[in-house]
Image (cartoon, rainbow, N blue to C red; front, side, top):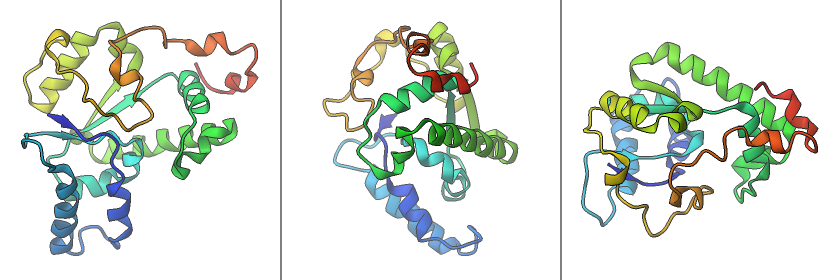
Length: 202
């Protein structure tokens, strides 16, 4: 398995495709080929590639039309911790412009939750849900469950490969750290001065 970070290509492909999604099988194959060219770089090929672009949740139907065998991992986290993390991150790209305002963050989280509930109803076989808090509490158990669902052998944390030398996402610092618990309930330290966090469910 190899991570390609947060790829922007699905939204570009979606703009090129009309409705309904399956109206032209040859067009679907063409778009899948374009995306795969960005995956297959100059390193050795592998069986699985990981695209962790958060906004891929907008295109789950397109993903599964292009690659019926695709696996969608749906990670959830405390809404207050999520809102605080988003608000404190200085995103450079316009697509995350909502992250500078708590009203916009609340609307975005609500919309994401509703959309993922829709996808889970329509594609239950292709979506695996896991909570951040559960993963931190018992990482080996939940990673083993995830690996079994994907269909790969589970490697314990001490056998996992080191992060790549270059990470070009907003999580570049976190990705280099071992699993840690300090971010759990982090919102509690800020509630006294950021009262907007009260609107998010715990």
